[in-house]
Length: 81
Image 1 (tube, rainbow, N blue to C red):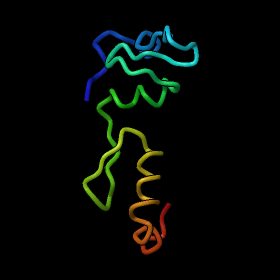
Image 2 (cartoon, one colour):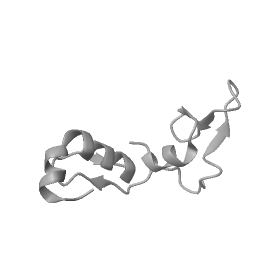
Image 3 (cartoon, rainbow, N blue to C red):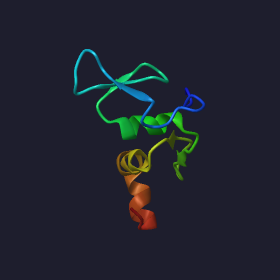
């Protein structure tokens, strides 16, 4: 997983894509994205760990979606989410 280049702020990390004004190009990995905030988190060290399996996610909403789809029976047993 590429990290945020040293000294590069969130706003400096993205450039408007030449192919489409609705897309942004990440200067860290070159990927074109529509949501800079969501993409930015893949380059940070913070990870959310699944309490039921070894899966980890860079965003808490992705972890919650994983738990709802992969561990639904555990949710009802624990009474969370």
